[in-house]
Image (cartoon, rainbow, N blue to C red; front, top):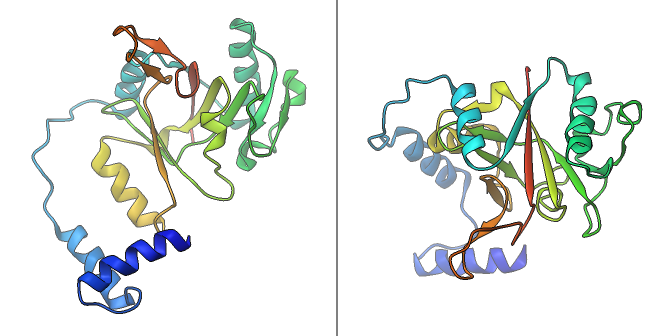
Length: 216
């Protein structure tokens, strides 16, 4: 974090301020953000869950539903089997307690490596307007899990699907006392059209993104 702190210190020095921001300065910034009026937005007269599902399909993600938390391993196994993919991978710690073995899967809770075929994660929230997943880095939410494996499976709580980007950032500010080191927005499988304007999936990340909507 020293490089980040050095950069911020230089910015504050140019502003004529010494040392890190005081609690009163931080609160003044938060108060300004809370009171700042939102920009004009299109009407959002749709159900967030239905809209998210529609937009995710449009981004070449696949979507499934489960009725209970305990049903997640079986749902993941069905998806992998249908795609002829290995029934093995890594997951975030919050999902490690699920009964993966009964679903015929071998799932470890550790940092992902290049050779791991499947990465299973939660999300901080999901954005209905664009079908986007939002994750934040942390000790128990490593970004490698959604970036290194060729297949990313994301468990999304329906209660964490927000209408738009504005609500996603507001949720982050309300729930996290400090900003995370990184925020990642995932809109379907990785893709590029740099070579002859031909869309290629999996260029800079997973070839597949599968979303499991959970009811809690």
